[in-house]
Each structure stands twice: as C-alpha cells, then as structure tokens.
Length: 349
Ligand code: TXA
Ligand code: MG
Image (tube, rainbow, N blue to C red):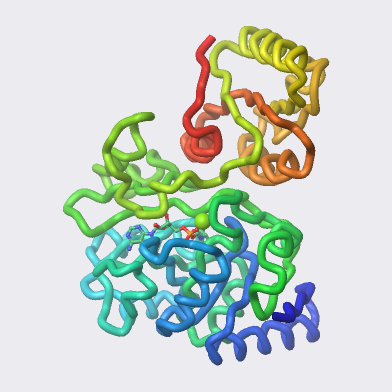
C-alpha cells in the first residue's frame, strides 16, 4: 500500500490534507494522526470492516478493544447508553483532554470495535488536528496507538512511519505530541469508578472530582495474578529488544548500583544502555546513556520515555538499566509503562 505522508501546519494546504484524510476514513480507510497523548491509528469507529483493518495493520489481537474518539460533547450520547452522572461531571472537567471513559455501548457500535464487549471506550482529544480529522471523518474515529503491537506508542510521525509505513492510507505529521504517554482510562461500568490505565490525569485529580475512585487490582501489585480489566493491559507492551532492569532506591545508591551492574555486564561482553535524568546524566561513565527528562519537570520524563526506548532498539545494546521515576504527579503513569517494558524486573537498593 502506498502511504501518503502530509505535514500539518496552520495553512490551507493542511486543511485540505485533513479534509482528504476525512474522506479516506469515511470510505473505510486508515489514517494515523497526532493527539495530545500519542499518535493514533484511526478508522471509522462505526464500521466493523475498518476495525478489522486496524487490528490487521497493528498485528493486534482482536479481543483488545479500541477507543472511539469524538470531537463534540453531544456525540457521547450517540455511542453510549446511560451515562452516569459522575462520568458527565468528569467529561465537563477534563474533556477535551487525555481522559478515556468506559461506558455501556449503544447498538450502533459494532462488537468488532469493542473487542466483543458490551462497553465502549470514549475519548474527546484536545489536539486540534485530531478534532478536525474526527469531524471530517464522520465524528466517531476508533484509534488505538499507532504502533505495531508490542512496540512503544509513537510520539512523533517518524515513529509511526517506522511501524506503519505501507500499512495505512495516510499519516498526518503534526510533529511531536504534548504528553507522550496514553490517556488515563476510567471505567464507569461499576458502582465505583476504576482506573484501568494511569495517565496524565492522576488518581488524586479524579478523587477530587468524584470522591471514591479505585485502581484496577490488576495494576496494583506486581506479579499479582489479578487480571487487568482493560484487555490491552494484560499484554506485555512497550517491550524494548534489550533486557531492561529498573533500579529503585535512594539516588546515590541507585547510581552506584547501575554503574556496578553496567561494569559487570560489560566485562561479560554485553552492550549497555542506561536511562537516567538530566540531574544524573554525568554520573554514568559506562555504556550508552540516555536522558529521558528532568526530575524538576516530570512531564518531560513522560514525554521522552517512549522515544528513549525506541532509540535503544536502534542501538546494539543487549541490556538496559533504568533509574526509577516515582515523581509526585505522573510517577504512577510513568512507572506503569516502564515496569511493563521491563517485564516487572526491578531491583531495590
Ligand atoms: O491516549 C490514548 O488513549 C491513545 C490515543 C491514540 O488516543 N489511544 C490508545 O489506544 O492508547 P490503545 O488501543 O493503544 O489502548 C486502549 C486501551 C487498551 O488497553 C484496551 O484494552 C482498553 O483501552 N479498552 C478499550 N476499550 C475498552 C473497554 N470497553 N473496556 C475495557 N478496556 C478497554
Ligand atoms: Mg496502545
């Protein structure tokens, strides 16, 4: 398949590209596009055939449901049945934005889109290009992250091209995204709202708005046998090719441990990668050292995490050691992704 790649700026040509992309979606084709969290791989959310195409392009198991993206508040009621008052309150507060809500689905949503479930995931993104595309494409765009299954989500159009060139009809290149990790998912199908995937909108922010909110048990304990409620969370996502280990503890001890492990591994002939922050960058003399951001600005760590993991896939490293990033607000979301990438391998010092 020939994939058309179009840069999106604030000009008439870009408007024309988005209009064309909308036509492609209406005809059942696939378009990758930027959102404020990560790039999405879009198809018509009300068309079962488009859902099948999305699964095929990503190499994704078809029991892993897709998020339907909307760009008008009133469209929420068209694809759901019975939105609880708490969900409406949250939509008022955080939409458009990096929040996905799981709600009972309306009949018009095909089971192919929801992975066979009676519920549907809905998100109203704040990214202007995403909003324009959703409206141009008919209003209901199913979009998983635009990576091939098992790779880190894309935060630039180049990442999308690496994974999906020739597998989609069009890629809208809107530059780097703003947040860098996927939306917070909140499940409203039970009495108490449940976080199925942590994200930029934190547990504290949700509790402030809703009162009682739980974390999905499948997220809480490492190695716990509880099954995550979001089907996609059970897969080992975001896995780099090299073996990744997280080292957690007091900063000086972490630096010493990582340097010790790196040296040992190098002596055995391994090629080492290290993931750290700007504050500790100069403290690692061995291996390829990559900085994911600054502890002073936790958003920067989230924004560059997937990029760093992808970069390491291009280097010939065989083992990666990472600092732990339990930052105050986004730490839960960042560590959820990093722990998965590490297959939950963590050393305490
Ligand atoms: O930030 C985001 O949410 C990005 C951008 C493109 O919007 N999208 C994204 O989609 O991360 P995806 O497909 O990569 O992740 C969606 C997650 C999966 O873990 C899936 O299992 C879960 O949401 N999910 C979708 N529908 C669900 C449902 N009805 N019930 C439970 N989990 C659901
Ligand atoms: Mg994904």
